[in-house]
Amino acid sequence: MDPQLLNYYEAIERASADMLNAARAGNWDEVVKLEGACVLLISQLKHAAQEPKAAAADLEAERAVDASAHEASKTKARIMQRILVNDAEIRQLAEPWLQNLDDALEGRRRTLH
Image 1: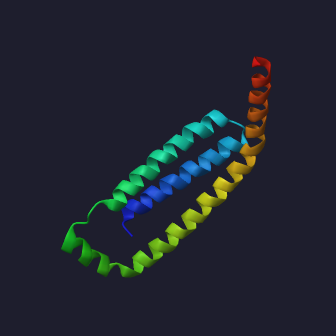
Image 2: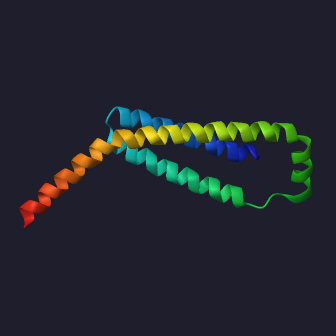
Image 3: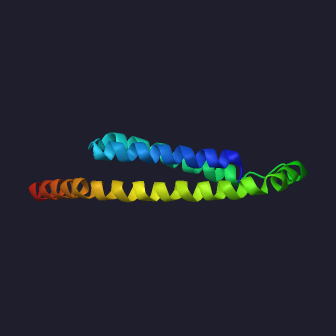
């Protein structure tokens, strides 16, 4: 795995952890802001993953570091697991907030009729 791609995964993980901390504090404006940062990082990761590699030189370098590529793949899997755990907790914390928002909007709709 390209070290640059692993850096993107790590940055997304950090943003995910920051989102979780903001959600735990009830700072939903910060959660939304950090979510935007995650979206941007994910977009950059997708773009970087699609870039064509510099053919022969990169291929030789990849063969030389095949063992480290396996380790990078395991690291990526651990990062993805942590991101998913963070996301699940954020969703759990957001449920009451979203329900309150729905209730408030429903009350507003009733007063408009």
